Length: 541
Picture 1 (spheres, rainbow, N blue to C red):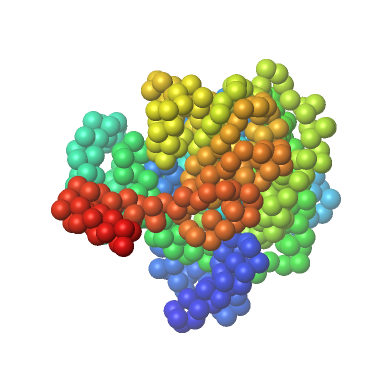
Picture 2 (picture 1 turned 135 degrees about the horizontal axis):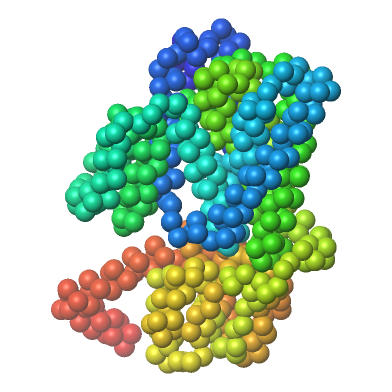
């Protein structure tokens, strides 16, 4: 039967992907289909073990990407905490009311069970949000960073619940885990020596499943908590991002097993689908609460709205919480199915909503601006550019290199724009004139001061979508100067030229040409002279 499981899962995932939705919805559907064929969790014990590995690796990956400093921002830690409390205060009475009017799934549930359901429904989907942000090239935008920070806080709340739900008193040896930070130099030394191939993957699995999962479980703590903590311990290493990428497909594959096990809990009844639909209908209130809270923390209305839309869905972590609750007998098993259906429907609605978010903001910005509190958040204020001749959008390695080349001839007439605050501060210490701003944000261009002597704009952002958006905004603002952009692929260059970019710099082609120039000029000087002489003779002839 194993081949059939793989075929059904692949087919459902592909069908869902074709309509622009996350494949995980297809995996949930595949679980329901397999249940129709007579399979359930008890007949597939290996699937449940793989599902547990998927959750553990998910927490480890979150830890690897976690910047602890980002969690101390008020809009992140306070915003997520207040939203959690507000969501529970809303959902508990709502669920109680639905039970009182006769919905069988809620009749007879006590306060603790209602609180568990409200807790599960308060989460937003990390998988969905990251996919939307990556597709739009907004991972590093302010609203993207706020959304990811809130999601990580929600994940921490979920891990705390998973740890408490274990129910056992930790061993006295658990205090020994406080020594883990002192082992950091040894772990980092091993990290340095594993290279970049299969040893790196194996190192990551040992860190997540042995040092994180097994060790924490051995002293009476939840293995998921251990995976998260070990991930955070490794987050400061230069290769942490590479490790996260190397484990990405392992994590995704094991999570497929988790979503399959959800579907294997049983098929939804008509009343289950009806209840799930009711839960989805209240998502606008969830979005509205995020919008209100984020504007209280002085974020602009656009930043708050885009963040809220990104978080306007239900979460796979809600399913994980429900899975633990049903396994402990705290909730009826049918709630796994109801929450799975609600999750799927929320994704169906959230995908087009996020795609249209900017258009919706433009239509509503007059009313939304009334929600803003001034002075605005330091990272969300108008951009003052002065009167430069050269503007560089994106001050990474390429942008800063271009800045230095221009500075040799036009010092004092160049301005760099970068959205990362730590990078802005670095450039300022180096003596470069750089301001913080997100050129992939519509409001950046609306707030940008007029620069009458601007002659050249260099689009040096790492994502093609961001550069293309900036070119279109400059055209909308009737910019008459020259435009140049970096690209990684030839087809990206074509779309940029159509948007008014005058010159394209292909990273890979230029790197190859630069490499040959280096070889000819530095390593083969005689050949270079001979080639030059031959060219000169040919020209004379």
